[in-house]
Length: 239
Image (cartoon, rainbow, N blue to C red; front, top):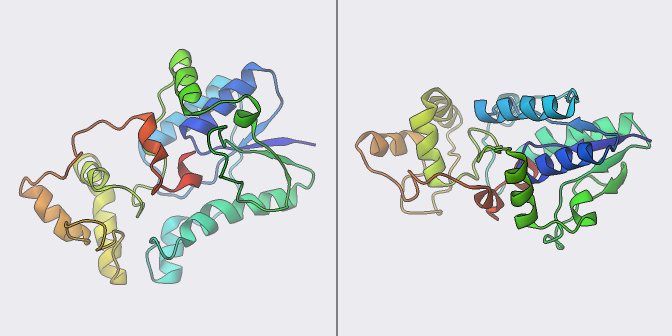
């Protein structure tokens, strides 16, 4: 029976991978790419794999842009097909092809109400819960190991990001932001919900305000590991 870690590169799965390696457990790491990862995440994934001497399993997958073309729509709060079709279903397909696997999921001891999302395709372990680790334990451990986890481990164009994150995407990765504008124009939909705040929902309109010097709240605040526990964030992409 093989143990497979559901690895997103977030703080919880990162701490789990490093601690399992310290304990001498045998496991592999499975990462389901979206094709829209930010450079900081890709660098982090490679660094963690080097630390534990492993190569990531990358299951067969279609990327975010394929599925947006397929649906002729953008993922949003009501149509969260991206999580299922890009993250969960490729993982399930891998488990089906490898019966008898145990999937190790990074749910913490302070997340009693959360459950795994993958169904009866494998056995499950929750090592962080076994160790009694909550959020502070995870943060303390990563600090002790000198490991810095990127604040963003989701898609560059994730509908769930906050306004300040859209601002930093425009500022730091203008080409990625421009892709978002292009997809909004092509589909007639927006990534952001018009009801979330008083700012425009469309990325083009947002950019015009950013270019005019208007700063959203939190635009210059450096995100911390605590911020990735935002209940509005995509949990599968960030744990």
